[in-house]
Image (cartoon, rainbow, N blue to C red; front, side, top):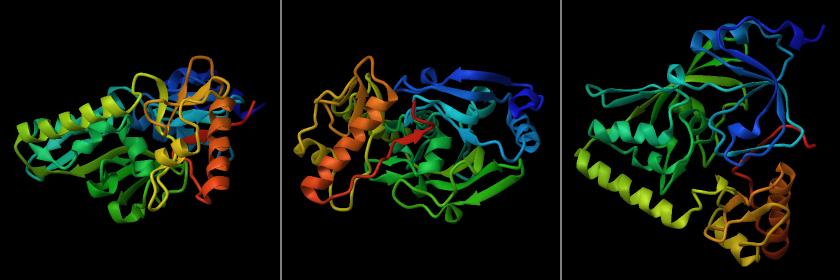
Length: 302
């Protein structure tokens, strides 16, 4: 009997061989052996406690910064979604915003603005969730998650609750010291600064307008493809190497912003990842500069 035939009982949903493409912004990729949609944090905890330790487990958020490879994902993919994981509350006495892992970053920014708390405006420009922001120190326009996070709570692979302070994360540019898929976040706490709500909303509107005019936000994309190398802008390196708008199978770097990889309609995950790696190799050969992926690539090739 395989582990899939003896899965723990849950109150949420367990889906076998579930296609993951529809859960990602690129709309590509193969199935999860098992997709688990927990009902709430207790359901998540109990499942992790009961699942055999040798079964691989992978977290998946809103899928805005990930390529699921065409061969799918081994083991269990856990996607925390819905009200149980997406609530955002405010503690004005301490200037805190408390959010679940499925809360959209933009929703956190808007809740802070409504409460008259500044400093989180940049989150309106990040197309992801709190869980993803914690995992990769998400940021834009000069601000990062490390600048606002107080602490976060999550379950480890054995289902034990852990508390991580800002310092514990070891934040660096688009990186934390939390080992991949070792923590399954259930809540995060951020601190804002008292400010006039109208001023906060104005700054958010500026970020939104800038993003809409400079990024292909209505395409099948995944946000910034490459991290910015020290002293360089990735989009300039991609552009100068001649890859802006150049087709590669069904993939392309956007004519609007050349650090945004897009699915032009019929791309496979192999097209997207292959284009990214071709550009990395070309830029390295031409400039000696290494481009590192910011988008996560998950799973097995076809």
